[in-house]
Image (cartoon, rainbow, N blue to C red; front, side):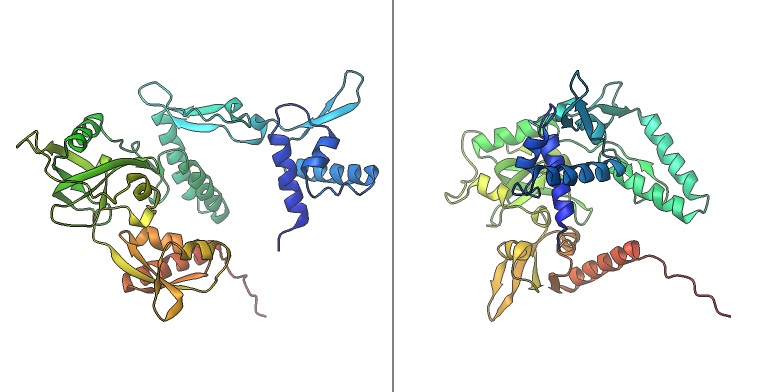
Length: 362
């Protein structure tokens, strides 16, 4: 069950971070539901002081702001002291720092930029620490490198952490060619590197639209003679050529019922790709909350109200999504998906289960 104290702490931090100026206790009491306004002011003050001291003990720097006379008039939590700085990798001497600004004042956060050589040195140091043979240090280093990998191109899955090249972006000329093909309804031929099979092959596609999702550009289109609309990631397209014959005559027509916005919004990670889709059957052990929302993404199975079917092009991404439901969703078929899912379960349990304690025998 949710802890009332933890919920109160979260609400308190949210109330402090939402403002860039000192907040009085009276305002905090109004904003934090856990502070019962029917209590006496002295009791509320004692509860707040305990919360503040305990949060400070966890390293959260809540400031007490005094007046010129020394009386505490409010409390403040500076985002720069609460959040880590943005991490970026310098490219050609310039920082690639994103501008992340919103109403809560994150614009004030600092940016920590690494040169490629500096990041490589950090990765090398992580490898050296692992080689010391201390399991506790190795665990801490692994945790630190996984956190760095959220923002920086560090390969934490490799035996020795490596600095990866930045993610390839869609080339402007590819966007321009596909845009021209869309306007004139001309087929496009290109070489495509498939995500799932790691194979490279030639494709001829009738473009239906371009959409941006999960930091990547995708082309939605179909193969001539087919009805299924597939998605192609632009940074995996090479050598695109627009059909030069009959430049003033369209090669195809986009069906009237196709809506690019609806198509793009409905895409899940496991649906993205140009490979053939496999039908996955999933058992739903829960019917409320997140499981209920997930059920709406699939198709019902006649005669089995607790099952849903999904069309999946990336079994690995789909298995990771299933794992996030902590057992409420279980794959039944195909066998490749079941094996992928069970493998993730074993890895997760092995990572989070502590080693059994040593037993001493007389």
